[in-house]
Length: 279
Image (cartoon, rainbow, N blue to C red; front, side):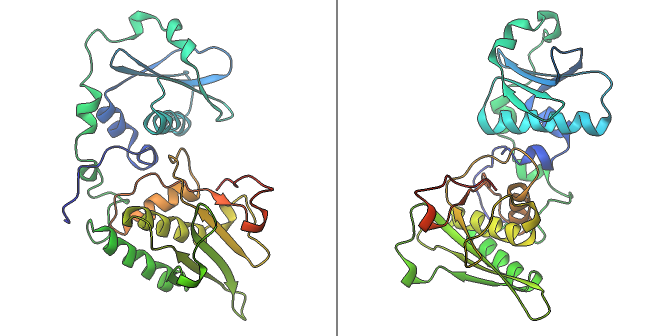
């Protein structure tokens, strides 16, 4: 394995690792009780402890899905009190801290969260469907593998951003164009800028591969030339979609990804008229 620094939990891990493993590494106590309003799950981090409460009667699949949402928001944002309702709406609700019955909080502190998270997260993926195909790699090795994935598996083109297009519009890290051959088969064309850190480039390559493979998951339209503009500002991956697929693809190609929720930006000509488009 390539020498790399210890990796902390990321929000996308909440969707890739087993719930039981996540509960153990975070030091979580689980319980069931009726909750107010339409809430179906709470996460409360109080005095070094994390308590997750779900309502009785949820199917195992629904229960785990809501717990994953809570974990993703807690890992990604560090929120201390989070709720999820039946419509999958997430709310940061610090006031609920006062409503927790002290008897529901265990008398013995669970293992300290920071110590738990310092455990090598890569080890938790060994033997799983999300483990790297050929072991952990350097950023540059991962980038090469991701480019090969685009050119071979997706029958596309993967190129460095041409020098003649610099300076790029503000915030743009990559561009993805979608073309079709005479038989109507899709062929992505991907360009990623080279004047940014290798880790950011690798995760952008992962995002562009995911975007190319799952256009049906994108609630955004390309410009008149069929080009999507991918921004460089990262956000935590808080649910299924292109960003989660990007993190999984990057990891399968050997990189331990950072946050992979990148925005799809409005085309440069429209940038002053429209806000970033959600991926």
